[in-house]
Amino acid sequence: MSEMQENPVADSDESRESDGPDDLDPETKAKFEKEVRQFLDQFGAKLSELDPSGVRGGSEYGVMGQAGHDLWLTQGGHGVGFLDGDWPEPLDKEMYEYSEGSWTEHGIFFLGNDNQINFT
Image 1 (spheres, one colour):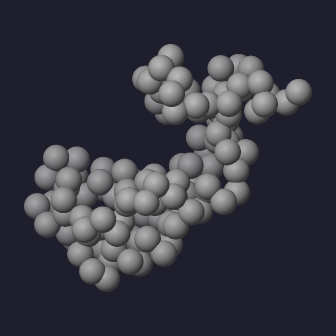
Image 2 (cartoon, rainbow, N blue to C red; image 1 turned 90 degrees about the vertical axis):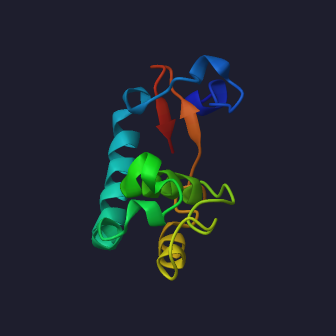
């Protein structure tokens, strides 16, 4: 039986509530960091020009923080993210189209025997 079948990461797993970047398998972390760098290469200049008060959540988390949050939601196919009214048009649609389902279509998360979160 594979690690993935033995240890799926479930949303209801209360013991995993405080997971953070250090809980990611190094390959998984590198993959996500690469995706974020590519996203910022594409949109970083436009995002840095935005007034945080013009982006819902931007005053609290900063424009880049809100962009990271919405990138995660959009990539995961959560039904919210860049198109939920937080971002000015047409930037919202551009970021959505760039990010939509980029990792949910290609894999799943699982908890490895090393107790780190993996994505394959």
